[in-house]
Length: 314
Image (cartoon, rainbow, N blue to C red; front, side):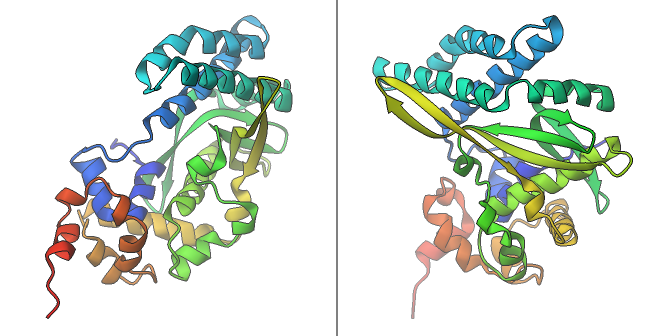
């Protein structure tokens, strides 16, 4: 079986097909948010370890999550680019606040539903980074979630983040984001990528559903807002069910997935060919130029970027 096309890869293609080629075909690393990515991984690992420990020995998941944070902090701090011990200390305080806020918000509810999901799914349901796979229009696709939970009506994959905007999760007011990007030619590829991830999770989890159970993806922000009081850091969580963005739009999203995978399979990476010469998306390559190219770390090796730089107006 071939590896599935992951939601993050498809999002990169939607941003720019040439960027996809650089990062997922030739495997040249692009711009990174190294410290942000490591911090996010730290939170995910700590919280998931808390749940794993609670499942194994019946302990308190909050205590186990904090213990995991402290035991891995040295590795995290050594891998980051903190400019001072003060910044490192601040980051540790933020991480503690995020984990505390998370367990204050969910209590034992998610642990109970994780245990129910383990019974329903019969597979690992606590990660981080559990890959869910599905077949959509004949294509194998996948998405990573951090844990799976279930109740009597739904099976949900949960993706943890520190803040929604870092993962480009659309707001509730963006309920027409799919039509705006895919049908009307707007350019919001990362937000649409989050909806694509939700569609893949929904389809992947449907294999465990029965009796009309629903499935879906939820993003849970551990520290959507933070503020300091008396030298301490407080955090506020947020959660966003992604079903809102899929209502009556599944066929549109499925068609987009098939369109992207078809281009990737045929090695079509020219953004001008993909965006200007194909009829699927009503936008054009100029939107990529205006929104993405100026920040792209691959510009020095990108033939489209070079061609624009040396073009003469006569």
